[in-house]
Length: 522
Figure 1 (cartoon, rainbow, N blue to C red):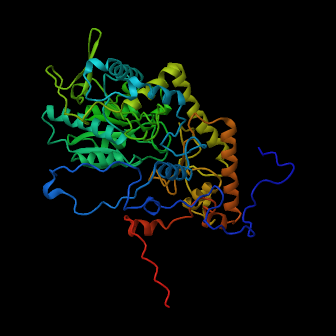
Figure 2: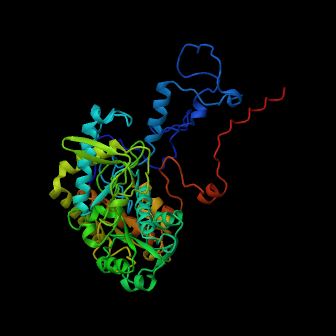
């Protein structure tokens, strides 16, 4: 695909040494944006407001003795600053975003429109329940969809993100063990070597020791390896399915049976749920708890301008330990249960309120727009796109576990770069010059020089073909010895490659005003 370039040339000439320097340091729309402190003045205000009346201070010794020194900007200055910064960043609205295990799919604008409806956007968590019946009904409806799609008995809606959901699920497991009198004896959590780093971190945060499960030669977990580690000290297993190698754990039911026979629980990391929606229900696989990233599977924005959402579905065994608050219904009235009086034994609460309303609205909008068949097709298309990328690159890039069918993401290693002088990092930086955000690099840790690509179902064949052609061209250049294209990349980004080692060891975390220039000697 190429643009019509007949007539007078209009494209800039790359590397044109005749281009003059500019007074501002800008290069047309490539604007050198200063820091806020370099734009605003710290000794005045960016808006005109009348002086505050004199009142007796109640701060006492807490009163600030000096000004905070914050920069003052007018509204246009602040707006322009952040718009210019946003234009230096890559975004899903700009192109394919192949970050593996992140599911960077399109965020439908219909979802945004629904989330901005006054009845959802303007609600306050402290409003009387009688005034937010529609909002609570929406939460309840979303919860029912999540339970139906996962085959689980209960769902905790309040966790704010994936890792927060992991914590919630593991706290439910911990509470269940304590109710059995085994809270002090079951102190070990099993985690595959290929797991997300948050899995062992969550277990450790709750006081568990972690034992790693090695991956077998095909990149999956061997039930025999799990059995070798199971005993009466094991609280549970934290396993991702599909796993971070982009492969479905085909022995998941056998693993679940072994874990349950040992008296432990099965936590599943739901980061890759987008691959199996409508195809497999985690509850049918023997899973006891699983978080769901609404910002991945159900298209809510990553971050969303605030908290995300990581609801946790729970099996019948863990349902009594779900945290408060949760939705109740009596005839046509909805309520929020803050304290329980029945057999429920909630372990506590995860957040002050019920969750992130804006994310709930967006996720349900996505579900209702697609329907069950549409969400199943989305998963099928995500897997199809990943395998299309795999087959088109398998002859020039190398796969650590052989050229086997993958799920929603395809994993390559750096074997194809051997003796080229080009590293995984170099290769990824060169992708920036081609206009792509790099894939996930060096993860999972079980693969040397890992490159994890997840195209999602959002991409058309034309989009994938251009990406594939770009990757093949980069591979060809690396094997042809054109190391300069990689070692100095990115050349065309707003900023060149940083010294990441120095940035980590000697970070500059505070802005300091430049020293005044010395006056020229008379």
